[in-house]
Amino acid sequence: MKMTFISDTHGKHNHLTSKAYNNILGSGDCLIHAGDCTNVGKSGEIKDFLDWFSNTEYTHKIFIAGNHDFGFEIVHDIAPEYKEKGVHYLFDSEVVIDGVKFYGSPWQPEFYDWAFNLPRGEKLAEKWKMIPGDTDILITHGPAYQMLDWVPSNVHVGCQDLFNRVMEVKPKIHVCGHIHCAYGQKYFNDVEFLNASVLNERYQYENKPISLIFDVINKQIVEYL
Image 1 (cartoon, rainbow, N blue to C red):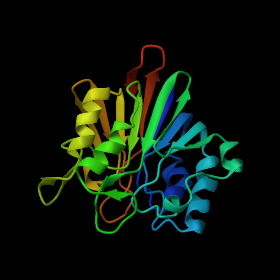
Image 2 (image 1 turned 180 degrees about the vertical axis):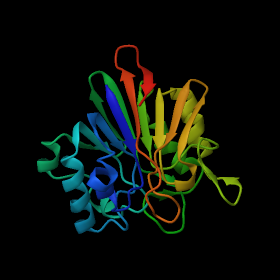
Image 3 (image 1 turned 60 degrees about the vertical axis):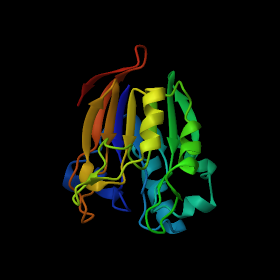
Image 4 (image 1 turned 45 degrees about the horizontal axis):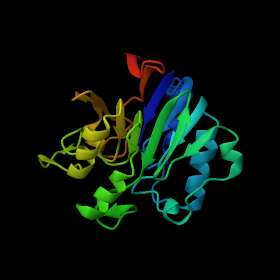
């Protein structure tokens, strides 16, 4: 299975399939977006994203909301027309594709007055307890503590309770976004951590989508592309 991971497009998704960037998004089996698909989650922004996302050259398109996507705090589903095109919106929920279980959740530690905020501690931990123990690909908007969560002020802003739950579940891949400057990959304790933010801190396109081949039988990454 070819999987491609992106995050934090903030309404600038079109550049990923533009001629100027040689359609860098490409095609494949599963396209996974880890949140912040819009600037402020207005209905027009959401429709524009979904129109684009549903027509990308991937069989399955999976996404969660992020702290900018306010509209999804009100409406927790997408129109049937998008589902018919292979779009899966995950809100503390899962989808199984070719035997691979994807689970997605939008929550993150309180960050100003943005969407899907919860205080660190018990309330966030309750959300992470919902992650099924047999999850293969975990999608959250915010990072786990010390896993691609570093910011220029030289602190780690990820969630400790999320890290604890990831270490219990041991998904093969945990993908996030949110912290644009922490884009990249990190392997720790049998889990492949990805921060798939494609925009930098100035909201300019800088980082490439992360693509890989995943062995659906043995549940492991074969290679990065």
